[in-house]
Image: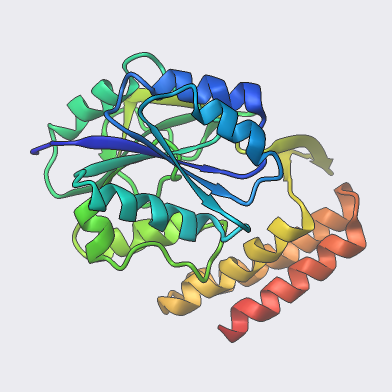
Length: 277
């Protein structure tokens, strides 16, 4: 598959400055241009200072948090305007290996009709997250961080859905890519170091599991999108599963987490909003 110009895009929201510096250092020599959208961070002055250290980095500042979907669309719009063909998206804490981009590009050259080619994500707290294929293969979904995305495909399928704001934005986008004939491929030959969130080890009867801790704000959109995404695409089996997962979320919050009242209220509000969209 033909691969021309590649840039990177990173979304920021109150990043840890030392880790952000490591992120930029790990990618600066691997792409022609780094684009960054800041979503209303409180430490924007520190971010500006970091940006000044990198000659190939361009910062776009949002005065408030417009959500991950809007920020991703801003990155892709800027990349398209600058005539890039592919954008590799990152979270603010993603750390790349030395040959990350070139290795991902090699994998891409072996395939056709690709919308996204993604690495295996290794979370620094909980290990491998999501799919863990032993060979390069088509997958249903992948997370945004580390994904090399075809900019033409992004535009053709209607961009990222900004109603979703945060959470499952990447999964819904992958669904539309596949529905429109583009492939989502993951390769075990490339990995990315990343942090999904704070994990707490929990136990219920005989089951042990890692529970990712989220804020009330995040719980709202998780609950909304568990039902909005399948309802939007008439995926009724997944819609039933989304309602079940919202119930399960309430149970886990009540048993294992703090801020119980705020989090449960957020889940219920988001759930109601998702059903009404």
